[in-house]
Image 1 (cartoon, rainbow, N blue to C red):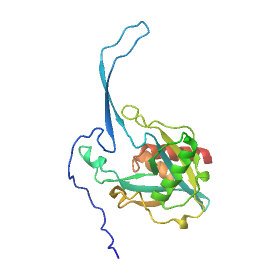
Image 2 (image 1 turned 60 degrees about the vertical axis):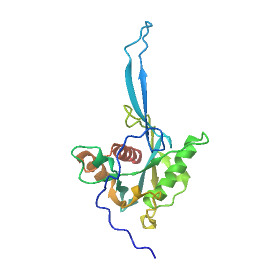
Image 3 (image 1 turned 45 degrees about the vertical axis):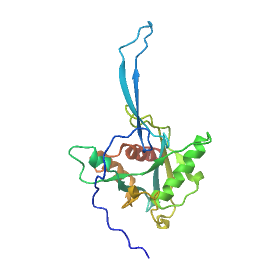
Image 4 (image 1 turned 180 degrees about the horizontal axis):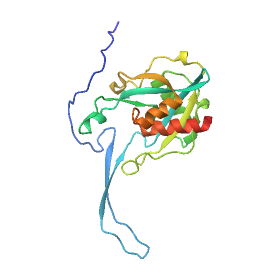
Length: 218
């Protein structure tokens, strides 16, 4: 029987380098551009860098919710986000960050709608511990582009209702140490939106998803 791993209390840098297209999770695309004007002239040349993600460009964001005692409650998730410590000065006090369920969308057959629902259901199973059929996932309006200055990613905002919160299983994750120490909890929808406004929850995609769910439910 394997011993249960200890609680995650921090992160340690084992190496630090800038990566290109050599097997990393992300790569940087650097292009030099000129603007073409309607009079046929060109602007001065300028540099444009943006992030590429070979594994999948877009992502699904899923707010899991339930109705309990006449209230709508949403499932929030706290997971590791090392960039918030490594990339900021001063660093955030914890590598754990509060979000709703999300994951990379991999479209291989051209069926975007089907891929969104299937990926959303898979992420809900991995990150929230609930088994839901893909046909219960619905999109919350149009896609959103979160960081157009550096990333061409589109977010597909979705929601899925859970009838019985007691059916939650283990948070399996995707097998990566990045999923270690993740936890979930329920919060009333209005309180979660208020937490976004106050800064207790800082994730923009989470706030947008929560507000769209509130608008849909009226």
